[in-house]
Length: 340
Image (cartoon, rainbow, N blue to C red; front, side, top):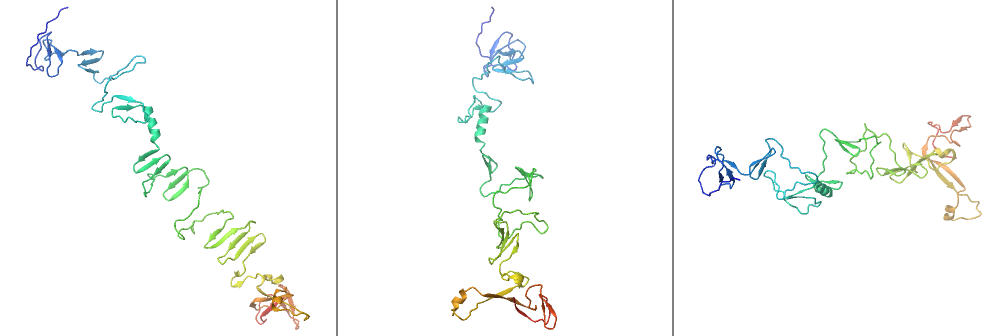
């Protein structure tokens, strides 16, 4: 095997222009690379440069062909091992890839596996922030004393089947209506109304509880009879037997009778009790008042120009032969003071 003995000497040549003799070696003192001359090329060629398949090697650098991918591939179950820092471009150097669910090492030179990223996100998605909003579990919270605003662009905000479009709330699906689980209370007293004169509710369904209207109440009793309680406590009820009005109720300006009997039950009357004695015993006032009346007379509670009669719808025969129909108003008939 032939060889040339190397003799060390320093030459102050510019390798960019100096041609090294064919077969001679030179050391670039600026870069430390070993170069070999061919007698033609300025600076010669770097020793160690060459090609491996389509790859070219220069010093410690491997190059793929122009516009071609550079692929590192092992055979079978082998791995590509980078036994030091791995860096892409001018980015941070990476020394390892960790499968660490908690990210506890907080390393600036370690990458994370997909599984560890997913585990970390799943564990912390319940406590995150989107702008000024905080998300905890299934709750989205605005900052303290701030409004939470959901705005769509020319669309609607839909929450679990409820559509909100401007000031209109409607159902998104086929459900019959919107359910309210709690009291529906206005924010101010006597300010807002339910419906309007032109847009009324069709039917109101309520239970037997009381409906309060300005202090007067409407309700039904245990038998289903309708009751109205006025502000003064008077009670009106409507059942299968008709309406029952509280004492003192009026039709127009006339008091509705509440204590008449027989034919007079339909008329306002004043009942006067008569207590009779045969003179055989003397009763004190208190005894008389405690005694059951022997007779009750019903006097008109109001003055009316109605002839005396024994009952509604009957007539009376006068000595002149004329007849007077009861309950017939007429001038000159005289004022009825009482009736039986």
